[in-house]
Length: 291
Image (spheres, rainbow, N blue to C red):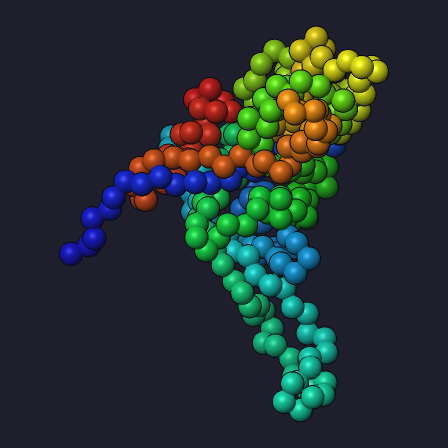
């Protein structure tokens, strides 16, 4: 008899993948996202995620409804990448000129479940006791790997979703001395008016990335709420870049808040077998108003 499943809470990180057309301002279709993700899997592309690690998509399954792909799911693997160069033998205390690790085998592998939602272009992966990898190495993997498999007239930009409380922390600081906001534009995500204002402006200007540096007047704080540009850009950075703020807190101490230090760790509650569907529904509600 199979063991009865129990409902539980599952945590996951969220990565925003944006496929661009070099020759147009038009956003590409969700079918294009499905295409490049399948290409990534079918070609067994593995790329560097950090100094010693590579990642690869282990398997891929489609969830289809009304002839449309709702989401892709499977396992993502991370392993230590070793090149067959010179190996030292501690028994002989010398370089082993003949030894080579078996081709295609790499140590320290670990895996976790993922869900990729083409309509929201978000990649989510489950945080487990074995797989707690920070999302920035996964971002590095996708930037390299997806740009290898997309068409010649396409390119990919990748960002890590940030916890919104980080922006609230910056705005609540008694004094904001300096802001550095580094963003690109979204693919028509849900958002406030000011965020959409900045998104549209960056898109229409044929700008790939926009970097804003704001410095306070002597003796006064930067007033973000009085600036459409700063308000929209800092809001956009939650999904499409990073914000770094130099602030003075309530105790008069100066310190730096960087949104990249606070990736969004979201969660769903339900049966393990429903993880993929639960994540899909939550992401669609967050970034596409459920549509």
